[in-house]
Length: 288
Length: 288
Image 1: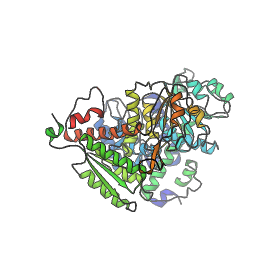
Image 2 (image 1 turned 90 degrees about the horizontal axis):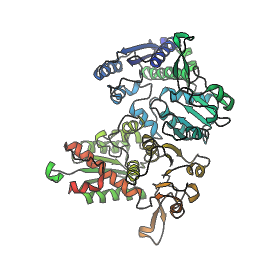
Image 3 (image 1 turned 30 degrees about the vertical axis):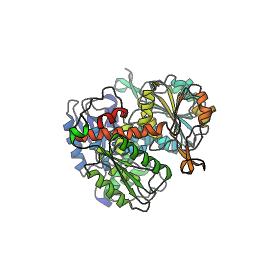
Image 4 (image 1 turned 90 degrees about the vertical axis):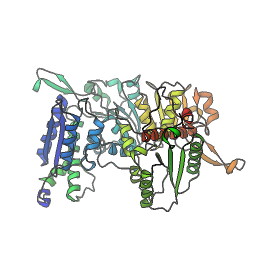
């Protein structure tokens, strides 16, 4: 039976964006399109970059109370005059589909605890690894970049699955040398073409999260997206590699949908058989 | 002026212990003695190992409301029938002097955010490094053990100060090789004498957090405490090393006192000049 028929409504996702930002605009748009495709209602709540923290908090509070909304995403970066901690803490734990509420991140640190939701990009990375049959336990993983949204939660997730994890960042004296020891490399710096072929061990599995917009008069919209990894060099060395665009990005969007669906099902009190532990690819079959 | 005269009362620390455990008993006792020494009131709330989760939560709630108590420590491990998440979340954020409330741990993950309190052992480790003038930025640190209380928060703190951090654990295929790359080694496994001399790079700084009780008929109480690190071998290789007992342990206790004092001052609305960023050693001068 269709979910809509069963419960009389459909899942809803709200995206809060404050101010414009080329890559954020793109992400927000791709999430909306994806929602449309699988039958999730999407609400883009846009505030100008001059919005006050109070206005953002009021918006969050309204979305927390809105019964059509089962997931709330706060698009980062926020303008610097807004205290991120306050905004992230204001999101209802039950609607925190991006897993960035400090309580959910704290649960990610504490072994034995389970976040209500896990941040979507790290979750997507783990899903790619799982579906590709990449062994994580006992492997050495290097995460390049220690961002709140990707680097740090990814390191914690890989650690939870018993990889030995090193986080490499801008203060690492020789990042190439450190990365060359890794069986699994996750790069999330936003520095275009940072990771060259000689940074990689033969046979490494490479996940490229970085997305930089570079001007290109010949491209649609005047720019194209490139990753952290020099793909042409890396694909010769790596045993598996994700491209940019078209790699981690779309899977991240799929995880947003998956988390939103799961959140909605919890609100509806509907249980679906997810025993094969598969995620979103089949979810539109349920929703449509 | 003495704090007691200024505000008419003294700081108070409550320790919640559920069930007996040799090392926990020792820690709880040493915290009580330390409180006595500096003039902090201490309350040991002991429940038997058979106590229900509801009883523990009720106790936490009573201590949250108790005006004599400015810090609440939950002594780990808890018996397995008690859900740690619930207990840690029940502690008032303002009294979470062990920094284990998931919100505080989440803030430790999120760069740019600041926990109300930082877990005492990791805080003690950072304090030892700071006072010893050990450079952290740009250095490679290996944390052995990924416990909730020590390993993971220590890794996050070292990362915050721009070290490149690798977390080594029981699933790391060659922990000696991984550790030998480190400028700073923090071992917190509880496996006695795990870290041998050949695990260390010449000149490494070694912090030994592990504390195991081994039977020794000749010793006081029939047992003695030994660390994770084979001290005799390590001191030849290391440029600096903390012993067990007498190293990280007492500094951890000092951090408990420091956090409790800071918490009390916040409750009292008293501001002290802490511009030299020194911690507890001088605090009894203020308190007595």
